[in-house]
Length: 521
Ligand SMILES: Nc1ncnc2c1ncn2[C@@H]1O[C@H](COP(=O)(O)OP(=O)(O)OP(=O)(O)O)[C@@H](O)[C@H]1O
Ligand SMILES: [Mg+2]
Image 1 (cartoon, rainbow, N blue to C red):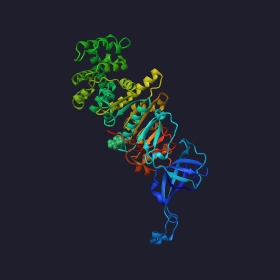
Image 2 (image 1 turned 30 degrees about the horizontal axis):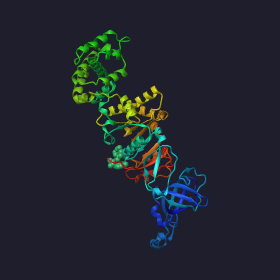
Image 3 (image 1 turned 30 degrees about the vertical axis):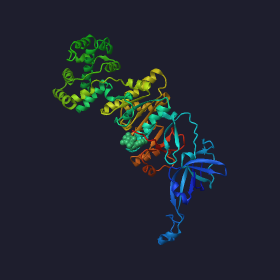
């Protein structure tokens, strides 16, 4: 430890003014950890330096002195000095324990800067902790409370600041030091997938899609937002037809014939079995009345991966539009759009999917880790997969009635937790509101906290933040947490891998600057 100055007049239990010894001025840097030794009372305080300023007693801007009119006098007669504020973290016991300060440090107390981990042993009494990095200047390891995991985490910073790498460190720490499982959604397939063995990775391309989503995908590719009805009905008929051709029991298991459309529908559907790849002799009116168990249907879709054939689909669509009396031009436009705008590649991308989102959850429970590679998928599909995995976690909680001890990582979270994100926002909001009771935590990484719906962001109780994208983001942060003297300017000069940690996971009372561990490729 090096002596850097003394406490000036006006200290409180949370903040003490430091007057810096001119010779070691360069050591009094923002975010340095310091120890205040109040020898007169035998109390030591741990604190962090902020609000460093350079002053001169005579050169105040509100007082006119002869220096102004004779600038040459500056060469000989001024007395510049530095001051700073020590934001007090706590009172330090000889064993390195921290407690609440009861008295402000006495003016005149000596202030020492902590230069290396040897200078201070912190003993925070945490039963279980994780280590994301070390304090930027002193190199002291800052243990973070793992019991705050189900209270949810946000990682915020401008592009390239190192958010995804920080999250990678968090994932590895959670896996090695806690009994939590982790499900990671890799938005680009480049941030997490390359780091883990293939056996932990599931490709979004293999996840089964619901009939409504299939219809939305075809519809949005075709450029329609009002033709989903025809497409959905056609998709359901296609699926039922396909499954009926593969398994005798599917239709009677999935469709409730007794209560609704009766035998007419049964004959039309079952008759398609004998002509698997051709359009059956179905009656659209009666099919529309069918009561279908979509959960079961979805299960069967995972069991018997569907092969989508654009020509068969178009035949079904043509029959559906005809029987529902669509206008001639609508029929033609739909046929053309499906052929040209959706085209074979879309139907190929729908084919062969065989992973139920439930299996992602079960895999994570079993292997502790499941990384979902979302790359290359349509945005609607990405949202659907995240939503359904969260919903499956909730189903597991509801059926088992016990904690799932799982952390779900959503990178590029503004795509899923924004105000207009619909179903995925709903699932994320429920998780951040209620997950804590069931050991279900979220880690959301995003460039701008503003882009996350307020209901979600107000429930993220630990925040890692670095250089921010815009000044508005800083005001937003300041609006919902005590930044203890951290200024926008001090954030602007942060480098890669440098993040403040604030909130429940931080065992120190105020936000602390850490340098994230190096992630090696
Ligand atoms: N902890 C780290 N260890 C090693 N390299 C790092 C670390 N953090 C950041 N980097 C370097 O910085 C680059 C950007 O980091 P990262 O991809 O985590 O940024 P990001 O904040 O997630 O950016 P974006 O918003 O664009 O996703 C990495 O490719 C890596 O080279
Ligand atoms: Mg990233």
